[in-house]
Image 1 (cartoon, rainbow, N blue to C red):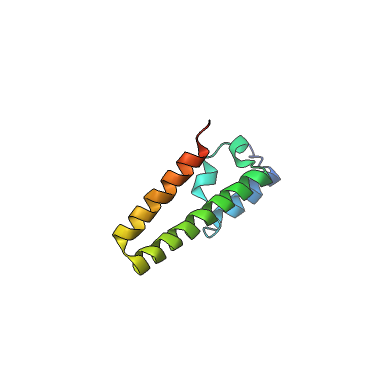
Image 2 (cartoon, rainbow, N blue to C red):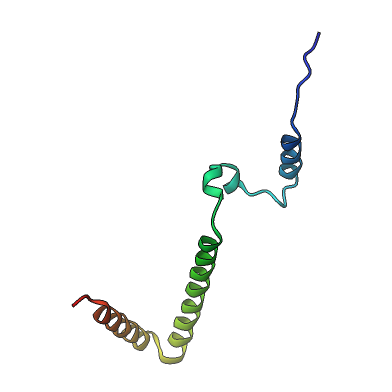
Length: 90
């Protein structure tokens, strides 16, 4: 007599989801469930950081095209120095 295999409803839904390759995310499949639960603040900070990076990338590209690489480089160093000097503890 052959034993019947019991497959839970959750497993069936997961299998259907995995079968659709347009929804597959290999990174999440092998990530622990504890790591998948991000707070809305963490998601917001990640989105803000990504947006800020892309904005600064566009600004530096525009400055480089407008004023040249050397001038933009010196300007970036000057701004970085000003930030470091104003943030030093007294």
